[in-house]
Amino acid sequence: MTDEERELRQDRRTEYSALSSYFKTVVNFRFQTVAFYLAAVSLILSKWNSAWSTRREAFVLMVVTMSAYMIELRNRTLYNNLADRAIQIEHDVWGYVGETTYYPFFTRMMRPKPPCPAPAGVVRPKPDYPKILGIEVPFQIRHSDGIDLLYLGMLGYAVHSSGLLSDMLHFLCSP
Image (cartoon, rainbow, N blue to C red; front, side, top):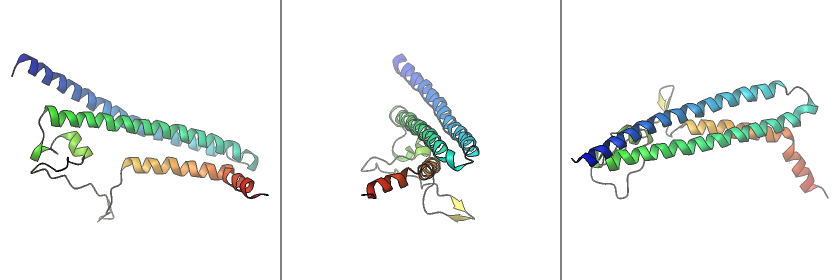
């Protein structure tokens, strides 16, 4: 191995280490955003005490929900971009291909589909299915699914509570 190849390999190790660190930061920030969002929602809902203020609080809840969800979607993109680059290093630089494709951390965690046709010996690991009361659920549940449900559910609640839907229907259906 030449000095240039050794230096390139060390550069990739340094990059992989930085990717791992950034990945951890993005994951932590995703959950911190949810925690701050839930605190904001509880503050907004604690002020939701009379009929005249419902629309105002519903509007604030919609704005806070949409803002937090936009931050979540951006974090999710960063999360996937960091993982994709780490997987690229695992495969292209470190040579985890064929039977060893799913050995490294990011590839094992993200479980990307193998290229078509899959190289000989490549077996994609079985998805992680959660268990409820010891019974395996036949579908994956990801953190992103729960976060989507939280934000979209609260957005639906805010839109419903604001009266926007009933106002729009009244406007569209009135002569």
